[in-house]
Amino acid sequence: MAADRLEQLNRVFQQVFDDDELEITRETSAKDIEGWDSLMHVTLIVNVEKAFGVKFSSSEVAALKDVGDLIDLIDARLPAA
View 1 (cartoon, rainbow, N blue to C red):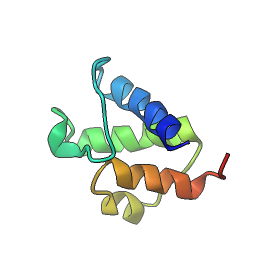
View 2: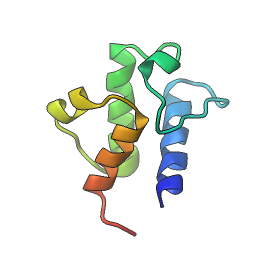
View 3: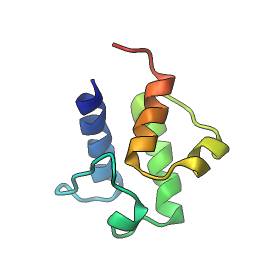
């Protein structure tokens, strides 16, 4: 399940950052991806919300430190498969 979530999230990252070679891990953070600035962060979150059918509060988004935190937040919103 976690691997599927990471794979789906990776596709969102590839689309947002227009990089088919991009591979994320739970430890990936903004400092690891060129172009991941505050504007791209908003774009990324909007696309993640659409892809997974979830909504995050601004405080939840502000607390995110890396992709692992984002996956955990997505998992908290979605029922277990």
